[in-house]
Length: 347
Ligand code: PEP
Ligand code: MN
Image (cartoon, rainbow, N blue to C red; front, side, top):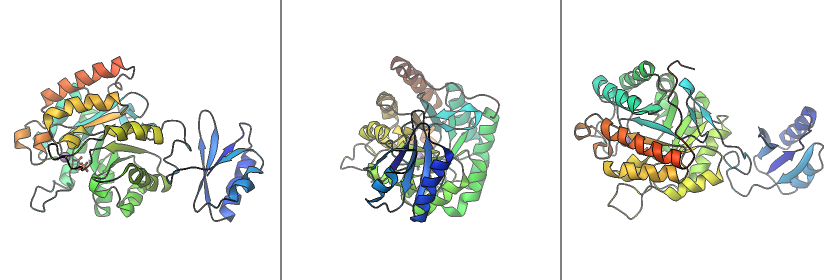
């Protein structure tokens, strides 16, 4: 349920509503938009509440929210959420951003070569996993904290915000210390305790769609983060598991277009995991931008043949530069030019 307030409502009238909700064991969250201010009613709402709130002063109308996710819902929050990062990088402002870097941080040399390459090509955010969720316990698991330091150091030197995966509450302090955005991977999308703990760190969260997760489950996962008080969520479509085995996953372009409509949160696309094949990354990047993605996450490795994870879907820095040029042209052509390059000085 949402309470739409009069344009001229007073603070006292707003407080009276919040107070009333609290007495009923509910919570109200004010959302101020360009065109209207609403109070989202959170908790176990009962039907009679609608009439009761409608008669309160300062209230324009009280509307039911049809979906189970409330704070992530565009009916509740009409304006697009823009996530602000260091170096003036903004995600969701209508100008797509590009996140790039290796699947995993392997060595200082490897990360630095990838980072320099993606910066020169025009990427906005550097990625690299230090804690890797691998299907087999015998595969490379990531460098852990030393990997985080290598990533952050490159970000500082090049003037790029960094994003890396948080796999467990165990690593939360370290990951929070060395990253600007915490990534919750597809295997943890519905790890609700992790979502709530990560939300509390206060840094933006990049939330991947689960491997076999529905759109509603994904938005409810985002709701956990928003409900824990962190409004800065970036959604990432990374492909879902279908009957098709010719590609690693099926990148769900429907989901990008639909979630832009259902939610105000920025939605980016990860065609690297979405396809599993480096030569499909460029066409699916173009398609993602064309259907409205707010950005891309692309795996780049200086030597994909030697990568310790996801080499088959990683681009060389040269191929990545080509991708940015092509995507840049497309973005211009559809009136949503790519975001400007990050500022050199940390903001
Ligand atoms: C990754 O980004 O390297 C990753 C492991 O992604 P996902 O969680 O989408 O599989
Ligand atoms: Mn990967």
